[in-house]
Image (cartoon, rainbow over all chains, first blue to last red; front, side, top):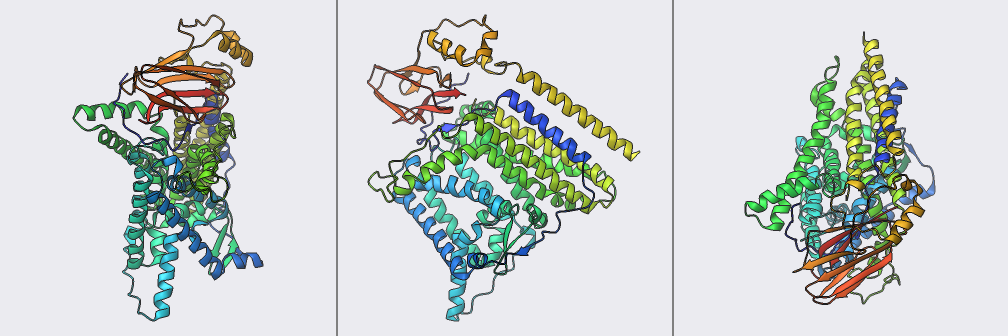
Length: 467
Length: 159
């Protein structure tokens, strides 16, 4: 057994971790995924069904109010205000991560909350996006003042969503590698998070000034792109100031045509996997590599961060490789398009898997930390112990609220559900690409292998977590 | 030919699914067959009380009455020397509803904090404190030296 020198960690944000899923549940779930896949192949439909979103305006007054200009201004102002409060808390509040609003607000409430809202309702983050609100307000103000707004630079098409993919990895790197150890840890103080938020805000506003607010939100702004990806699964969408309903899942079919989209969804799956694996599946590997870096003379924190960075990169490469092998295999079916077209053609089928991973790994953490968010962090955002804004500062987290079994069943249910939805999207796309349903089905053996691999990998990570 | 391919593949998948299902059933009906017997760092100690509680709570464990109980002191003691747990982070494992008991001995004055359960106790330099509580929250929890933020034990409570 290797004894590592202890790293002076900041106090844990998260006081509790999940139990590993037991072997019998792992086996049931894995076989369940296989059986589901078997039926999916056997009962496959023969005409594409999801390409048309069936968007219909909702003819109600509530729908009109929700997307009205005053409502947008209100939401935008709320977004800016909350960002300001969280940054202020980070700069001026306590250094104890679990008592300061900033960490829980950014890494739990926002980062995990918006994907969950998005898959149900659609793009809820868009109106609350503080940078978009500022960008639009600035645009409106310059137009009103008659100052000729400088024309936006042409955004290189090939760049696509790559800036968002890179930003996504950078965000998670800050959270789990720089911060070392789950959502918590060394170095990642509320102060550091607030400074990072300010730096990101400056960068985002500059990019919006260069390329235009809406374009940057659609391509480069990490949170818009990331939350927007999950929101494609949801059922509401505003088009030209009209709120409408659409078919669930269907809006994903248009998502991946922009270059770099595959990188975003792979980054999502890879980063979640790494976070889940570092306290379980990768633990021994990480310790061994870290040891060799320590022997090479690196400091303890540097060695751990370098090791984690390498493992994060390997995880991303591994997820990408599994998908690309599947796409490569599909080329063996004649009559299909090029490798590049197939590669982006099926990328959207990974979105449900990405959400399933997110749900499986963070569901319990979200429900527990939100109890803190809406009790003492809400009333005492700075964590000074002297304020009680809403009379809830004395509250706390009830760890008995969720049983371990309930968490296991949600985790396994999420992975199987994501698997089914991923297969559904992939099969539907195959029917568009190959006119002959039989060719389409044959191509899907490859995607099925990809999905089974990702689902079983996800289950495996859960079965060895926190052991 | 193609049709044959498809059928063959479906067959293979079907068989694979059935095999996996079989494995699932087998594993399911071998209670406590997975994992916990093999843990090397079983610092956890089972007192007579705990054993009785376990037996009451989980009758299927009686199927293995001959499982030898290691001769260990009744309460696990974690020794802290110069702010580090001797022998690495201790692993404490209980079933929900059991009485959890462990002690911490330290050569320096420390505040010991069990997260989640949120129990904090001070230990004097050269002294010992004992934690004694009902393990009624499921999950994995850290025991830390609060001031140094050094983890000294991991408390696992299984359902």
